[in-house]
Image (cartoon, rainbow, N blue to C red; front, side, top):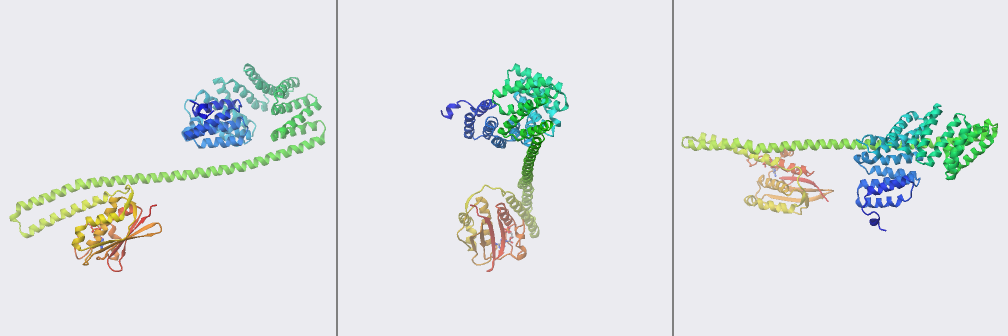
Length: 597
Ligand code: ADP
């Protein structure tokens, strides 16, 4: 059957829900469904779906396959695919499986961390749905169980109370009974055996109502242990016997071994020492089979104590040695775990620091961009003001001067005519300055880039300047020019300014402008040289400033803005422009532009 037929009309979410239910029943039938979900997710390319499918694999590996390492790997990857909103939406599912897997692997620290993350993500939600309450209670319940066995059990009571509260409220009976049993682990060390028995009876009533045989057996086992603590051996042996019968019939090795441990102890206390020790040895064998170091260590300790009481000192010593050995092994494993954890924490911290630094840099860049935008806007506003408001009074000066000249025409002497002429000239120059400033302001610092053939640009300029070139008998010699990435209009402005200046500031019989280009590493170096009047050393940098001109005896037209425009254009392309001496006289302008590949 093709995947299309199998998953007809189903979404990835549908498949995941189906797989979850099967995994909860420990059914291998979940696997093909998860594989289909993953194919669909990969096909859609949506990270959210891929994350869900990965989580389902994790869930499967943890609950059906008992492969906790892979379960952790898949859940971690799933979380990495989610953004913050998605994590608070359904990340808790991954955290629960992650915590379960770590717990089953024996990594208490990481399990606790995962459960706490799950609680955090659920508590950040507004209105929890019933299923989400169920998850929240599971986190509390698991934390209770996890820490109940560790040295950090001061919060256990709080966690389990919260779990019981939620389960009672949502009527989740199955888990409620488990929570009652778990609560006994807090009461037991306090010697509150009667209360424990009350709770266990409540749990058993629920289990019987639900006809949950497995849980009934578990509660019976616990009742057996509690009666043993109360020195009521008859009742203890009765309940332990019931539990053992059920576990043995079901071939449940771990549970059988656990009950045998308690049964052995109870028999020993009931003065049936020989049988008690035999049963404890049987439990030891089963834990060996399971390779369960933790329980083995417990049973070694117990056997050593009981054998000593029984006067079998030699054997008691052997078990004492085994007990110390397994403890040391545990210690080594714990030590390695702690070092690995510390390393992992350190790496995470480093990564977090790097990310924070990156965010800071980004913020800084954004602030600069914002400031740049503001100053660009100011410049545009200035251009607006300059083009309308400043030019208007100038026009008035010119027109009233003309009117004055006309109305006084015959009554003006030569000097008065000169005065009016100077005033008109000043107004015209001012107008020209404003127009030039506007040209500078209007240059776009972020132009659209396109391929520009510089050779064509220069040819077009030669046509534009045809009259000037003919007038001055000038020639422009161009050798191979490259195609560059730039704004064509700006390139026209740049080269027209430079060629125009080369001809203008030139007193030779035949002005000669040469343009060529070489490539130096990753840069084009374009040279525009002339045989003109040259530029004194002290002005080589200044001339690129706005309104800066070299004082000369002869007057040349212009306002001193052309080179400022050239510099702005080249700067905006990340290039450089400067002046060098022409050894044969005249000026050499050089431009560096990045070669774009
Ligand atoms: P403008 O030509 O309008 O004065 P520019 O900004 O183009 O303004 O040039 C600034 C000054 O640099 C000019 O006034 C001139 O003194 C000097 N200059 C520019 N190009 C040349 C050149 N090719 N040869 C000699 N002097 C130059």
